[in-house]
Length: 284
Length: 284
Image 1 (cartoon, each protein chain N blue to C red):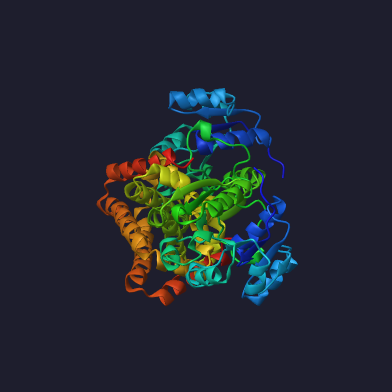
Image 2: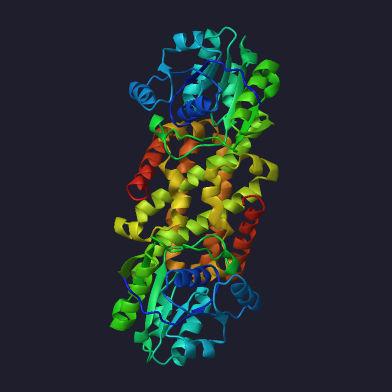
């Protein structure tokens, strides 16, 4: 797949934006990557780590670029993306946030709506900021493009070319469905992990016991608890209804385990775990 | 560290026993490893996969061995370990189960008690059976030896030599403390993961959405849900009280997240996640 070497501006040079910047240079997707970040420390780090070629103001970056990729917390996203659309001429704007419905509402009817593509790459780590950027990110991961019918053919074609060059698997979905499924398979995992960390920190007063006994299994279930509250508060806020729905179900499922233990119903406990084993069908 | 090349018998040639057999041969800990397993398929697989040199009956294996390592589900453990102690002469017996208090109660006062060492290697995967055995297991993981004062110096010295040769970090703890800490940092993770799998399987009727959208984060929190119910039912049963205690706390922690979402208390939600971030202090 060939890709025009367009000038790319990346708004937010943190985990997602910084990793994207690295891949855009490495894959020859762009010869010149400009960064925009209102955090002066992040701006400095992005230069020092060679994530981007230069850091510019929003206006200068937009006028110098063909494509603007936006990778900022989703609360800033809903205010900043409409402003970016106000500033652009022919440029394509792609957001990479974890929630989609509210943002798509906010740009509805904007004169430049068709130059905007709403996308969610299903990749991330529990770390944040430019120092969290890693080479080789996004490879073989999924990316969901939402409400593609409201974007121009040109904008969608470019977005697909971009994600295709990153070796991502591209799916289309409407924003409402995206937010529902994201609550089920991504957002709930973060809540369970945050809550598990708080559980263990509350119960286990001996740090040394955790050090000594924490196995790979514990680390695996709790690692998302290291994720950034600044990034996750707005995600949980914007997707509140879907998340509450799945969180209620999850508490109910945990209560089943609790009830089995209390009633010493080992047959049903075994059955609950056998049922859970069916996740093998989906996750290998 | 040098180790006598003793003849070793391994009871239960599954994930733990099979992986141990591989390491015992690879590390030169034993020249001859005998397997014992009452599952004929597992016995066949252990030979076919070259995990052990031969499969024997319990009586033959014991008479041919200097050390007997027991790696079976903890419900079988409490009945089989006393029987093995009935059969031995000078041999050392080491169990590798995930719960300790009940087993240690069961062997209390046995004439061969001092030849027995209760150990829990903090390593495992979500798979089971001989085909789940992997090379290089246990390396750099912790192993907890419980109630060492009730084992002979010779038995403890051999256990430490064995685990040291596997490059494990050795800790001592009393059985009661072990079971408490294990509930906090290992057993609860399995319950949350099983319950999360059931949550998603219940809510998400579109398998394809899980396929497309499941990220590394989701896989990480849910992978333990693939664990064996035959192995985990007796663990949860034997450690019921400690697990109920931490499970109640966990449900309470999840309710805090729920309440924040319901009341739109984003400041407290942020605070809960900041608090969870402190797990970074312990898990790197």
